[in-house]
Length: 308
Image (cartoon, rainbow, N blue to C red; front, side):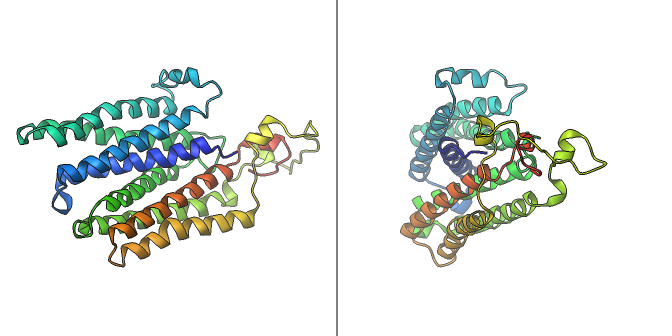
């Protein structure tokens, strides 16, 4: 698939924002690391809302006709894209009220604050999961059609979210969140490694035989029907050389996982966490570019490809 920067930015930005806000609510509810003060909740919470809002706004520019973007939320029962939009839109009022109560409300309003926080938490999880399922539900793209897709979106979103949280916390308050970041890093790296091994497994590939239904002999496409690239070959047939894919994957693991891990296990300072967070987010941009670039739609089987 042809990687679109607007969608890459959207998935990285909104995933980090939703993951960050979910961790803020969990830290507040369960008093992780001794609990977070109102000031510690406010600034990361505002950043999370801006990241989610900026991500959703960028996704609109991927549409052929942005002014009709409101139609995206009209098919909630059947469309994961619609569910993502609905959950994302509902997230903003609940998250904003939660932060407002954390900053302005007296202690007696704590139960009300928790109610809004829990709803915002569930909406953030639902939105990230729906984003992953937009791709995972597509049977025509085998690289995406796996439970690993939403699992990776959830893991990477929370991993980038906890790094953002650590970038706001002074060194003496990082404590438990450093261990949480290392645990999320391990889970995210493990799931992504499994995903990369899974998508190259030859036994799950679609071939021209499976596309035509002729399985008793080897089928070969003799004529593509066109001599120049088409919309389908440009958007659904995007290719990147294998050696470059391997280099980009190595870069992704180095700057998204290895370097942040070195910072996390080395008595991290607040400034060090800012650098680690930037490094990880850049790594996620590379990861998301590869996510689209390596996806092969089965329509390519009718345009010269023998295997997808």
